[in-house]
Image (tube, rainbow, N blue to C red; front, top):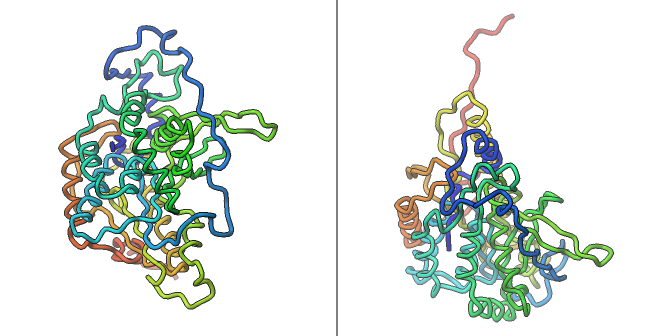
Length: 402
């Protein structure tokens, strides 16, 4: 669909942009709000979340879930979502891409996931949307005088309209039909109140009578980077039956990619208790939108560069940790683990949080397509166990005192 323009996932730095905008000002893309009063006009009411559309911790297999033989997890990654889209298209051209029993997506992965779920016939749609988007199609920087009264530096209304134009009634109908066959499409957001991941069953939502608005808002929330994009509000039934408003933001804050435990339980099926044979019950595929390790670069001794480098290190490390965790679950379920990611030596010119370079996105798409057509070329172990990056251990050259 689209790439959210945050190439290196500096989520904490996005929050600091609010302060920067107040000090130096921001030039809005598009029409400037006429006044502060106009910019503070009431927004539309939040979507009501009915019971059963979010997953709870489950010890057994979800009812209606068919045996899981091929499952796909799509990561967050902002601009690098073009790589994931190209990879899936290249995989299609090999003739070996399976129909996925379950597809999960986080952040930009959530915008790719519906197309990956419905199959190769949507590769062309995904390609056009992930290589042709412009900045004004995704966000609009607000007038600097309004930012102190707002919840983010930019408005995500352009992205909301783009999602509305793509998530059609026909697409929702098809997702609902596949859900009825036992296939699953899951998207994750972060509940800012609980600071926890929330997993949404998009197949259930697609089948609701009035589910279109909720479906679209979940996708918008999943890629709403805090500080840059406003969080999305949902009305959730409280303990007393009255609706309680919750703010949801980018799922990548709490998890770079995921797969619900009930999917692994369904993969085991009747094989519980028998010796585990890797690949005997199916395949787990993870496609990372970006590199597994951050690119090295000098860091100025200033607050923003230091926080940016620190946040980037944390996000990359969390992604690798998630892959290690998913590898363990896959092995225990008898599934063969597959991992694809952007090669480390590819130079990508994406240095700012809000840059959208169509040339770079097309380059990433082509790189992904080449990787998909090359077999695909998979890693069969998590990154810290499969061709790990060198770890530098430094010691002292000074003689020890006796």
